[in-house]
Structure formats: structure tokens, C-alpha cells
Length: 116
Picture 1 (cartoon, rainbow, N blue to C red):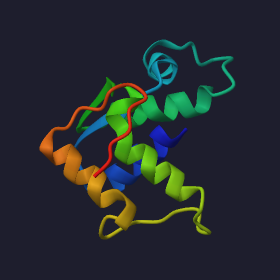
Picture 2 (spheres, one colour):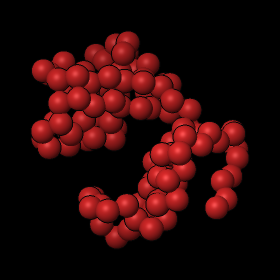
Picture 3 (cartoon, rainbow, N blue to C red):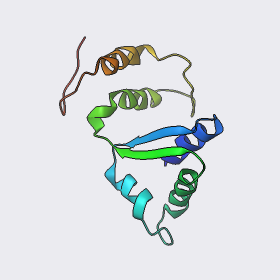
């Protein structure tokens, strides 16, 4: 579960206020309520719960996939990378317009495409 990795990375980087936005209600439900004793992902879920219980502000929020155009674009870019893990010091070129649109507060309709 990438949630665990992102939380651990944030903690290790010194962040103490994070919002974990998830577009998968099932994952959010598992983290919040699943009986992990016999669940195949039980160890991962318990890790996330332990991370959340640390001394920091960590909030989980559900969001629609349309609210994650930047995350979706990064995910697609990641499929083409040779490395398993990459930290971008600056936004990749393909993300700049999406970040600009997000800063302007543009709202995307479901299934919509934004052209600049």
C-alpha cells in the first residue's frame, strides 16, 4: 500500500502535518475499520494505523479521482521510469500546466479533459 510508504516518507522527512487524500473508498474503509487479524493486507493496515497514531497531525480524506489530476499524471509518468523511486526537486514538464490549473482553482468534470 502506497499510503504506508507515503506516510513513512513524510514522517522520516520531518513532516508533522499531512493530509492523505485517497480516491479509493475501500482503502480508506480498510484503514479505518478492517479486522486485520486474518486480512491478507493486515500487516500493512496495522502499519498505517501505527503511523497515524504517532505524535503528528495526520488526516485521511476521501477525494474523487478527478481531484487528483496531478497524482494521476505522476502515476502515468512513473510507469515509464526506469527507477523504482524518484524524488522530483522541480515539477516535471508534463505536470506544470496541471499544477497551474490547480492553483487557479479549476474544477474538472468527471471524464473531462483540460486543454491549454
